[in-house]
Image (cartoon, rainbow, N blue to C red; front, top):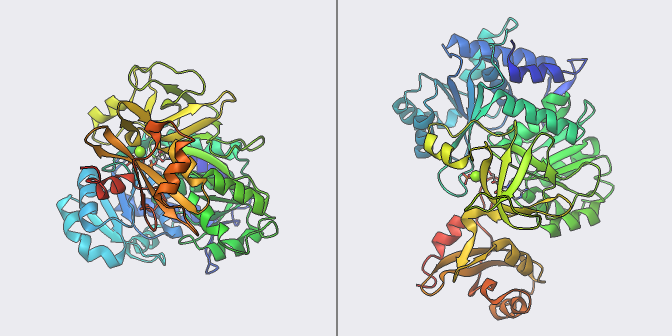
Length: 505
Ligand code: ATP
Ligand code: MG
C-alpha cells in the first residue's frame, strides 16, 4: 500500500524535477524537487510533534508556497489537513478549533497572541506560525526535521485527507470530510477533461483555504506536473502581464468582471492562453459574452461544492454554453429530482440536483444526523442546489433551494427574475430575494445595483410586467451601491434578507 493522494503527486512529477512548480511575483521559484523535499520536511516535523495518522492539522495562514508544502506534508504524515479562511476572527477560529480538535494549529505570527486562548481552550497541543514570506516556527521545524527523504505514511483511498469547511453562505460552515480518493480521483478527472499537461502554466490568484484554489487548482497542477504563477490575491494588471507566458487561469466570476474593466484585455494579451475556467458562483451570461467578444476565448464554467469537489464542466472541445455548467464529469452521476418525493424529473424541469461518484465526500464532520439527512438511500448526495438538465444534457443551476421564494403558494426562482432585470440597460446586476409578507407569505423583492442612466423602480416593474407572470414580478425594487459578497465572490442573500426583513411588515 502507498499513500493514496501523495501517489498522485508522484505520478505527476515531471521527468526533470528541477522544473518549476511555483513561481511568485517576486521571482522566487520552487521546483518539483523542492516540493518533494520540503513536504517531506513538514511531514517529518509533524511526526516529530507526535502527530498520528488521522490527527487534524489546522492552519489559518496567508498564501505562500510553504502552505502548499505544509498541506502535502500533512498528507504524507497521514494527517488530515484543515485550512481555515484568513478572514475568520478569533471567536470564529475558536469555534472551528473546538469542532475539529486539531493536534497542531499553524497561524500567522501577527495573530498568534489573539488566538492563543482559543487554541488552548480547544486542546491544541502545538501552536506554530507561518507568515506570508514563508517564515515562522512551522518553517523552522521543517528546516530542522527535513534533511532526509521521508517515507509516506500509508493511507488508503477511503482514509481522510482533509476536512474543509463550507463557505458559510447559507448558514454556519460545516466540515466536509474528504478522502484521499475524493481528491485524487477528481484531480485526475480534471487533468484529462481540461487537458492539463506538463507544458501548462496556471495563473493562480485564488485563496488556498477553499476548494477552488486548493484542490481544483493545485491538485490539477500536481497531477499534471505543470507550473503555477502564485499571486497573493486578484491583481488584474499583474494577471494581464502574466498572460503572455501563461496558458490557463482559474477564477471566480469576479476575476472576469474585474479583468473586463482593464482596457488592456484583448485578443493579443490573451493570445498565449488556452483555457479560462470559472466557478464557485454563477457567471453572468453577459460576462461570458463580453469575454468572448473581447478575447475570442469562451470561458469554461464548471460546478462544484466543498462537499463534492467538481461535479460538472462545460466541454473542452464543443460548445461552452453561457449560463450552464456543462455536463457531469466522467464517473460522476447527476440527476434532478422532485425535492419532496425524490422522483427523477424529465429534461428541462427544475428540481433538486443530486450527485453521486468518487468525488462525493464522506460526510459532515461530527454531524451524523445532518450527513444522513443529505444522502439518499442509493448514496446520491442532495446538493441543496436547484437546477435542470436540458435536452442536450447541459446542467443549469437556477439557485439554491434556500433562496427559492414561495409567494402566494407559487415557486419563484430568483435567477429567472434576475436575468430579466440584468438585461436592462443601466443595470449592473441584481439579487432577487423573498421577504416575509403578510398576504403572500414571501414577497418577491429585487435589490438592484444601478449603472449609468439607471431605470427607476417604476421602469423596472413596467419592463418585467410584460415578460414575467404577475406572481414572479417583484413587489418592490430596492437599489444598492453593491451586493454583499464573501471572499469567494458569492452573493450573501442571507445578509440582504436580514437587512430588509421588515420591508412588508
Ligand atoms: P454553505 O454550504 O456553508 O452555505 P457554500 O455552499 O457557498 O456555503 P461552497 O461549498 O464553497 O460553500 O460552495 C458551493 C456552492 O457554490 C454550490 O452549492 C453552488 O450553490 C455554488 N456554485 C459553485 N459553482 C457554481 C456555478 N458555476 N454556478 C452557480 N453556482 C455555483
Ligand atoms: Mg453549500
